[in-house]
Image (cartoon, rainbow, N blue to C red):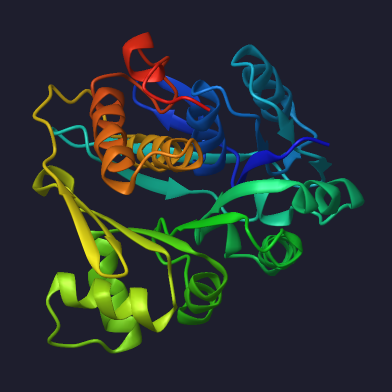
Length: 294
């Protein structure tokens, strides 16, 4: 089995004002890494229902490989409302298929052959998927790039879940609002944003901490240095999936041997492009795809 890059967690339908689109951070991540020519796979679970059929059909139409067993829960859905700036609010259905991802022998094999994996906190709200994710991470090779894209949603997280995942990752991706929540949860009062990041990087012995601050730019902290990039001004259609495209691009660029600064700059360009398109999985222009050699 070849080394693959895995998006692990929720597979769901974003029910947007103009119709429904397949979403969920893992599929979005795997799709974007795949656009740069890497072998990727989205791992989740779907229901024995029409939406489950549509999930598989949609993944196949996008040319995205998947490992998504059918389970006896409904396929995940999210009601998405957009404000005047295209910023989404999510109402996420509970007790669904992706809460119940089984740790199968096939998934264990995949973990052994994993070159990079990205997961978040949302898919860990239920113990079944949480245990599966942790087993996968504990089975993956030592040199696997493990990206915890924290993705806090509603009240679906606990201090323990976050702490366990930060311990298991070597790259933490977080936004400015999430950093405030983490500061409160972990008791880092009085520290400014940058010092919180340095503290987390050191305390958990991370290789990188990626902090995105919306229109105010983004940072990548590595031991001893920090990269900053302005956010380009674009006409935003919606920001759904922009963060996942950033993470996917950054992962692809780092794996291809780019420097942190180069990878960061490309991730910013790609996520800005995704903001100008509807939905999380637009086709990237060749000009962006060709920046990554692997």
